[in-house]
Amino acid sequence: MPQRDISHPTYIGISNIGKVCSASGIAILDLCRRSEFNPKRAGETLAHELGHILGLNDIKDSDKNCKCGTPGLYFCLMYSSDDQWYGKYPRSFTDCEMKNIKNNLKNYQCLSAKYIAPRLYETCGDGVVGEGEDCDSGYLDIFL
Image 1 (cartoon, rainbow, N blue to C red):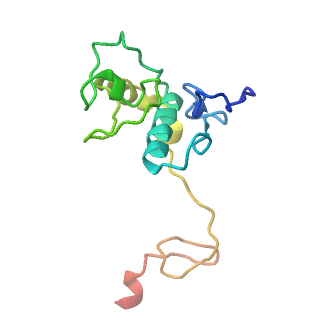
Image 2 (cartoon, rainbow, N blue to C red; image 1 turned 120 degrees about the vertical axis):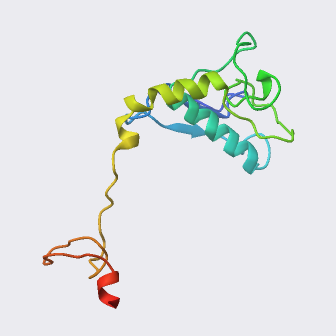
């Protein structure tokens, strides 16, 4: 990831666009610099940066053909301003962005790959054939 100083007065997050399945697919948030921590703002900022990682760019006022769940592009997640939104409904991605994500999900193999966590303990009846077991059909066999 390129080195950047995000202590800039207008940055509260930064990420690499379109890097969802790479080591540089990260987001950095600076949420406590200007005021006390705000969980809603943190969630919106994280969602915005994850949008970038999924390949979305900031939207501009000129992107009038796209609509989000709230009235006006200003309240969409990918709008570049971080002004507080106190509206009734949460910020959302636009319909154009959701279509983009849906169409590109098949290209992100890492999101569909099954994650197999390392096993810390072997347990008889856990449904996983471990070392020294011929079979393991799950907990149900223990109680029948």
